[in-house]
Figure 1: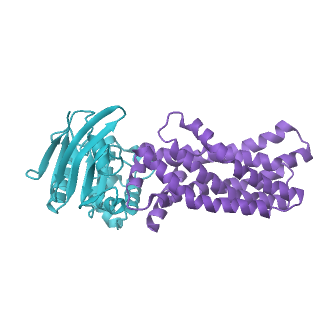
Figure 2 (figure 1 turned 30 degrees about the vertical axis):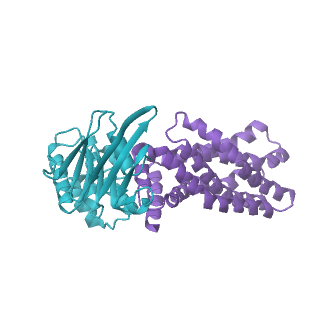
Figure 3 (figure 1 turned 135 degrees about the horizontal axis):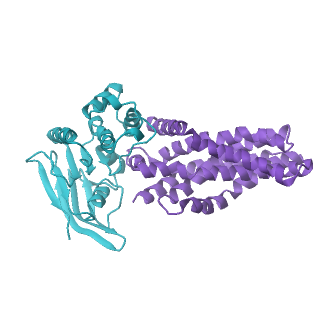
Length: 206
Length: 222
């Protein structure tokens, strides 16, 4: 359970948002909306513990994420706007590295099935720099199929640059994650088929 | 934890192998700078022999510094640094893995090539061995201290020049004791004292610096 109370964020002189409070429970998805520059990415970076908040608290399972950083990082998965892929390594190498870094037990079979789920099996041994934007995004998203044990997903524009088929796949994966009691916070500007009944909206605006 | 350490180290080495040209320039830079001095100063054997330790060390400092922006720069640009910070593993430990990879790719080649370059200056016998040992102890210090500068200048405009201003003054103790070890051997007073101090500095740096780098990286990503 993720509890956020009276969160405020300042960038330079400008107050992006303040007094943001919400709860996300097991099996729930929070869709953060707002125009460009409203502070969606800043909010997500605060939620995953990268940036400190100007004011307010973020609690995970009742504990502040600042004081229990390591266990929180073991429960959460952050997909940033940048894909976090090394241009010179192949997709499979990148994915294997992510798995080992995150402490996820993933053998070659797990990686192959994650790549298959993203439709990247044929490209698995291609260096990332030869991929298109959409393929890169899909390679980054393959982590969602690998990290089954991560309960809280924080996804910044996961649907950007994806084709219709990949959007369907990701929506289905999100649905399965929520079904299994997972939590997700995401931003997107697209109209996407998010799991109905489990989705709540948060509008960031002054 | 060790698995993550090995993963970061192996990835950095693999990445460098795929981009051989990047770090080979560092090593060729070192070779060329050292080789320019005999050409510029003239073929005076006694003069070259006295200058050799200082020249090799200054060139090593500059070469190490040249490679610093790459330590965290590419990770910062492509977003892998965020993933590194957000793992459940202790960040200073992962920083140490990256610094170790940097040392393997720049420090060790410099230490191995330096004795060969020393021959150009008429260094022979024991001073060459001491030069090698001193570089082997000193270059990890250069990588560690340099990592602080690299982390502090992440995302800063004109970071390359700033690294030089930040890091070169901090390299001075390494330069003094590293070059001093070789000079002492040439003078016949023995290098044990200098080498012990270099080793002591290295131990302190290994223990303290990864924490400083980790803190700097977290600030850079805020």
